[in-house]
Image (cartoon, rainbow, N blue to C red; front, top):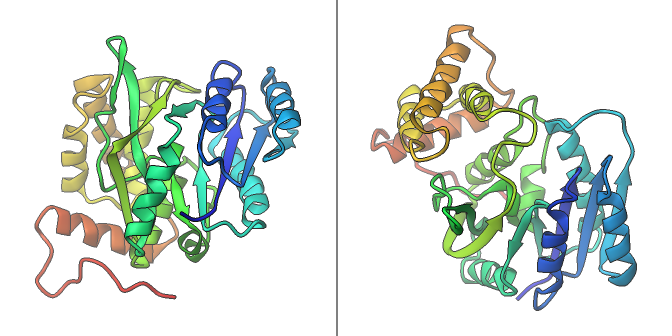
Length: 297
């Protein structure tokens, strides 16, 4: 099936992290290594990590001490610390797992089976399920074309080819990595038949739902998303809280970034690929424009 190493960044996850740890302990087989990074928690998260690591040698705790609060760059630096340790084991696959996720014992067995069946699959995983009306249901924004950053699994060669996670001012480092992988010819696919259960409400960590939507619109503009595609993307989110008002705020964020002429990300090849891919998905791709590029080894 191939070896697997997991990496998690946890900051003040005392209400959720034990669900994640217990889910990993139930995996069969377990990963070769789990780098569990305490990213400067001020609650009991670090103690919980150490207690489990003392009983389970495959869990490798890393503690980062800092004064800064939770932010996007902090999470990336924490992930990179864990990934460095994980890659030293030279696993076939690298999984990034948020510390508020649980799943069934065969979750990674099914994910890695998809990799085994498609040697060009570079990033994959399942679908995020969230609690609504007393039961877990597929998140409305799930699509087979994008893998949730909370449960990403990489083929090691794909991760190394992309250059790995880089800190981004407003986040979306996982989406950037997806686009980069696609631009290099790797396939990216999420499997709706493999659920992962998200226990913390999306986007409520350090900002209101409306502020999150506004910032998402800005991030989409800076990533290079086309106006028509962004509009259609927003319409898809009418079933996601805060519903219609959230859709309006997100598109307003995109338009405000365009009006202010905010700079795009400093990766012209990624922006070009994203726009070409979006035109293709809207049926607007010119006849002579390729949908994907060949993978560069």
